[in-house]
Length: 493
Image 1 (tube, helix red, strand yellow):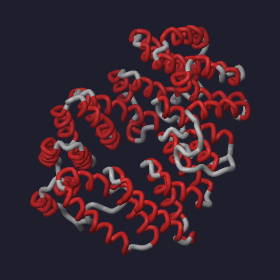
Image 2 (cartoon, one colour; image 1 turned 30 degrees about the vertical axis):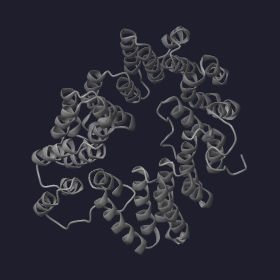
Image 3 (cartoon, rainbow, N blue to C red; image 1 turned 90 degrees about the vertical axis):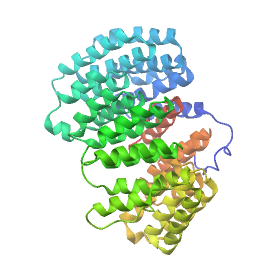
Image 4 (cartoon, helix red, strand yellow; image 1 turned 60 degrees about the vertical axis):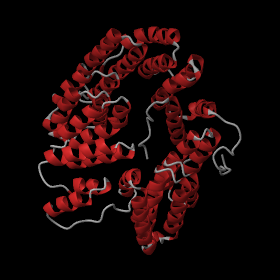
């Protein structure tokens, strides 16, 4: 679309079918049959869940006889239909896929059988799911040209189907190099598994994962703990969450950060007693004094304990909280939950300092404050600060180079993810870098889609990148999110 979009919900009637129709219309232009198939195989499952069997199958002719991706597509359609509740059509798709699956081997067989396992899992067929995963593993073992390539796919499928014991055994079998530097898919699988153990309040399963992963890459445990925290609280697993956090707080590198992060997130929900309990448990078991834990006590209202812990720490003391895109929101929201007056004083002091700064530094500080306010529900004030931040950053000379461009990308993406379309749109329109435009447009299109304005979302995508394949990838992300699935190209630049 050549015309720039208006505000969300002001671009005429549209729904997710608008995006599905666009993907279908550009399918013939998406490269050769091989690359087209690998693109469309990501779209058909979410389309099946949203629009049904016939709508998804309408894309199958464009696979061009690529049997591996065709078989995987049928399995993905089955998974989408199963999640939709259309079990009869899902089983029919799996029946059609099975003879094609039996003919595959190696990595392509692993991918296709993993898709079938997800479909069987969605249908509630536990034994059939395990059989499909076993077939995927057998294909992986027979991969000759690149024998390491299929295994990460299998790891993600095991995480997605809740086969956590099998996944942990697979992770433990990795080489020392792979354990220390896991591939993106191995990391994704491990993080999802940790999140599942936390959400279920399964202290024993969490401990097994935390002890193995913590010896190699504790960051994944921290992220999984964060991802599963809200589900654990909703399920009433407060005691288990405290025990889980206390166990991992013993980690020498990530334990204090994880303990502080969990305590703040619990405080934001309003459970001050549990937040305090978790902070104290983390403090008592962490192996050395920690500024992260000192600062969380300040956020929880215990200035004396904060000062005591800071006194035990060596080196210079950094200001807390930092007025940055990442640093300010958790501390502000935790403080706001217990003491609105103290939160206002914190905000005022940081805004005064931000207004006195200049250039990129000022923009990032104002942006951090704005994002915190939006997250806390003060959308008008927060968006005003984000708009000022966008104005400041666009006035910064381009000679600043990478720092300015990186800030434009970060601020534009964060503003869009927060649902603040106006400052994000300003940055998208004024940016001259194709890379910056694409990143901002990806995030901003989701803002429009979440508002139900899919015509606006398409227009935003077109502003960021006119390439048909890139546009189709961005649209596939929109369809997947609408279906409640993971965005397959979310991290594609």
